[in-house]
Amino acid sequence: MNYAKFVGWGRYLPSLVVRNKDLVRFVDTTDDWILSRTGIKERRYSHVSTGEMGWLSAERALACAGMLASDLDVIVLGSTTPNEVCPNTASAIKNKLRANSAAAIDLNSACTSWLYGVAMISDMIKAGSIETGMVIGAERLSLGLDWNKRESCCLFGDGAGAVILTKSHTELGFIASRISCVPDSREFLAIPKWGIQPAVHTNDLHLSMNFDGAAIFKRAVKSMSLDCQFVLDRAGLTIADVDIFIPHQANIRIINAVGSKLGIDPSKTVVTIDKFGNTSAASIPISLCEALKGDVIKGGDTILIASFGAGLSCGAALLKWGTSTKNTVDTHFSIPPFQGDVRDLLADSFSYHGINYN
Ligand code: UT7
Image (tube, rainbow, N blue to C red; front, side):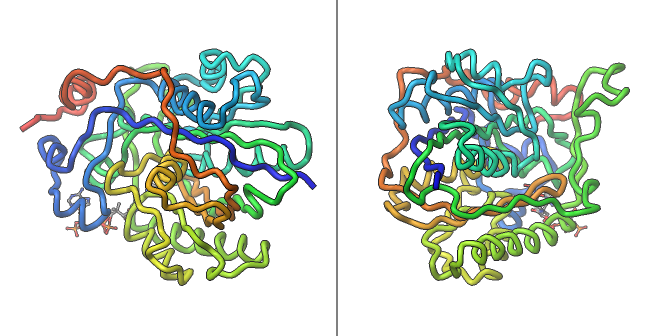
C-alpha cells in the first residue's frame, strides 16, 4: 500500500504589513470592529505576483525537503488569483524552479484550492501514477478588493505556502480526506468579471467582490463540521485522537464555532488570522508552516484540516505527520522588500475606486 507523506514545506509572506489602524485611513471601518468580528489585527499586501510568491514558497519547500526541483513529477498551484490564465501560472513556477520533469496544473476552488490539490496529489501518489508532487497555495487577493465594500475588503491578505509530498510505505500524510461543494451557494461570494465573460473585453480589469458574510458563515460552520466528522469516521478515529486542528483562517468566530461543534480542545487549534488575515488558498499551508516554526506540531501527530471557500467549496482531511518537524528552511533565494507604503502599492486601485486616504 502506498501513502503520500509530507517531506517539505515553505511559505512566503509579503513585506508590507497593513494593520487595522492603517486600513481605517481608507476604509469606513474601525480597528475594534475588525478585531472583534473577525480576529484580524493585520494582514500583508504583496508587491509581487501570485506566481512569484508561489515560486519562493516552493524554493523554501524544496530546501526543507533537501530535494531538487527536477525530482518533482507534478506542481499544482492552488489559487483564485493566478497571474494569468493562459498559459497557466503553475508552468511559470515550474520554469523558474527548473522543474523540468514536472507537469504544471492550476487549480481554482478558491480558499479550498490547496486542500483540494493535496487530496488529489495524495491520491495520485497512492495510485502509483506519480511519486512526488508539490502543492502550492498562493493568493494576491489585494488586487481584487473594492475598498468601498467594507464587509469584505478588511478580511483578506496575500501570501503563499507550499508542501512536497512523496511516496511512502508507512501510513503518513492524508489518511482520510473529503472534498465537497455546498449546492446553490455560488452567489454568496463572487468576483464578477474575473473570467472570460464579455464584459472583460471592454474595460480595464478592476475587480469588486460580492459578499454575503452571514450566509457564508452559517454554511461554512455546518459544512466544515460535517466534512470533519466524515474524515474522522472514515479513519475510525474520534475527535479525542486529534492532536492539532488547522482550519482555514477566515474568521476567528467561524474557527471557534467549528471547534466547539466538533468538541476540540481550543488549545489544539492553530490560529494565524490575527497576523495574516484570510489568505485564501494560502491560509492552511502558511498556518502549517507557522505551527512547525512554533514547535506546535510533534512527530507522529494527527492533524485535522478543514477548509471552505467560494463555490461554496469545502473539505477536510486527517493528516498523519512524520518524524521531521524542522522549521522552514531559508534558501539563498529572496524577493526584495517593497519600498513604500500602502498608498504607493495601491495607488491605481485607490484612484479607480475613488478612495481618499486620510
Ligand atoms: O474564506 C472565505 C471567505 N470568507 C468569508 O466568507 C467570511 C465569512 N463571513 C464572516 O466572516 C462574517 O460574516 C463577516 C466578518 C464578513 C461579517 O461579520 P457579521 O458578524 O456577519 O456582520 P454582518 O455582516 O452581519 O454585519 C453587521 C454590521 C452591519 O451593520 P448594521 O447593518 O448592523 O448596522 C454591517 O454594515 O456590521 C457592519 N459592518 C462593518 N462595520 C464596520 C460590516 N463590515 C464592517 C466593517 N467595519 N468592516
